[in-house]
Image (cartoon, rainbow, N blue to C red; front, side, top):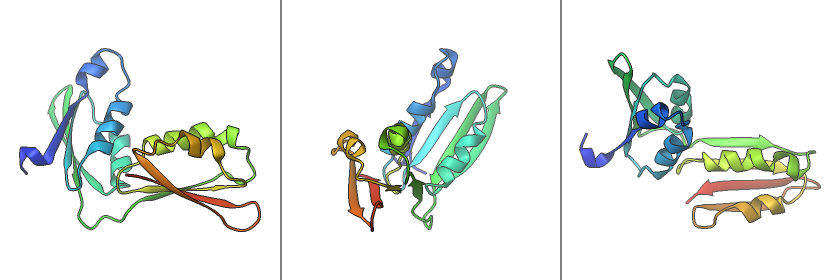
Length: 153
């Protein structure tokens, strides 16, 4: 694998400073080019990340280099299905689920999308989406049922 096809993120300094590295990891994941591998350097084996990356078509290849030094390669799989996350908020006011939906959008990978179901058109959510990084389709599907599909550009 060529170095140009790999992005390295070392979160050890963040961990040593007491900072949660999840935001940096998800930002790095969102910036990967198609076919690019993420090389993560950390102080422990981050097993919960494996399922998160696998859902977006990556295979985790962990390797312990030393007692407190792990290298995990997240390698894209060619035949991986495009992930889709569904969230059903019908019957709930938008202010009750807006933050949860925005958090899911912030973790959205380039190849996936989110399908939301709501009882009314989510005006606040749509206003919060950044048109430079995300796009959406919002359609009524019967009475009191809106289907909103959001994807990363």
